[in-house]
Image (cartoon, rainbow, N blue to C red; front, side):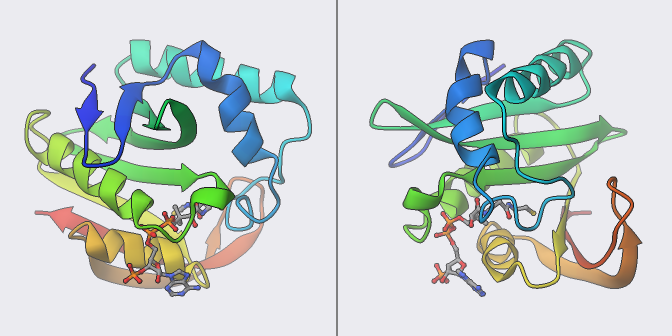
Length: 169
Ligand SMILES: CC(C)(COP(=O)(O)OP(=O)(O)OC[C@H]1O[C@@H](n2cnc3c(N)ncnc32)[C@H](O)[C@@H]1OP(=O)(O)O)[C@@H](O)C(=O)NCCC(=O)NCCS
């Protein structure tokens, strides 16, 4: 898996050692506000999640990059549900680094890699209504709004309104 470099960030393939840095984000209620699961409260759960993601990468289902800024792990980007030339983009950043354009910078790099060297034809992303920052990140990374749907069933059983963004054909 490729290391991606942007002006300010290095996106390295995720490793199990990244779990504590990811836990710092996954246990933040504000960062988890638009996720379909509550904030994690134990590092062991984050370690288990990273183990699952590592296995899914081995199985070729997805790719996870950890975002590094000045030697510090501050976020994660992923391409998941890789199938038939398409994939879904996901991203999250530690809260103290929000608002500096970093997620957009990283999303542009991952989208460009997916549609370029990886040979994917189409990227998609789902954003819950109210997550204006995520919608804007996608727009800045070249995605366009494809459709909105109400009361979409989430993995936790809740129903939320969502917007679906795409880039590519
Ligand atoms: C979404 C997230 C990654 C954004 O990270 P970030 O580094 O702050 O994003 P950027 O600075 O690159 O861009 C954010 C853009 O959204 C805008 N924005 C911020 N809050 C906003 C809001 N409530 N409504 C509309 N736009 C908003 C910013 O002004 C900026 O746009 P601009 O550059 O045109 O001014 C970060 O908030 C996060 O990790 N959230 C939790 C996880 C998450 O929701 N992930 C997305 C799941 S689909």
